[in-house]
Image 1 (cartoon, rainbow, N blue to C red):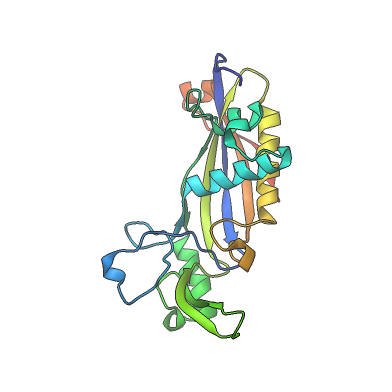
Image 2: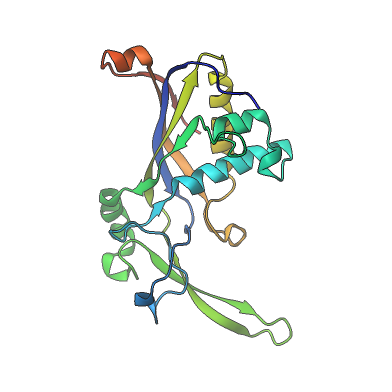
Length: 229
């Protein structure tokens, strides 16, 4: 593992949109107020609006890169992955900060409500799907439960911040991050991926670099990439 002795030269802001291609379920907690209601809730803000936790997105990106290397244990990840995403066994340092991705409420109400109709939505920002297991002997359904999902076409605004140092690794690290984002589009995030949940795509992705000099002089950063993944 490379120790952090290099100097910070700036930051790269990676911004864009995450669009759901299928229903999305990232589980949240169930409170006593939900008795008699939905069995499996999605994670929400204090205002009851679904969001994608930064930890979920970061963890998925890391795990996809680890699969390329054949790593099944975070402790055995390569130095490159540990440098990008952090290594708690050493110092907890990470070069990639992944913020929570918040739902674009305006677009949701303008587009999702137009498609499904506000009165047809079980929840303000989600729908509910009944699921059950099948008894193989009898062929009958059992243990029905309600699972909450963010519907297809929902847009979340995401932001990741990459710390650039003077060690010449920036371009290689950004390439790894882009590869992980591309892989995720053909994978899933959240739960029940094998059942078709959690497919997403990235849209309007921009990479903007802001040097230390930019920060000192209060100058805007420079757009270094505008990608279609």
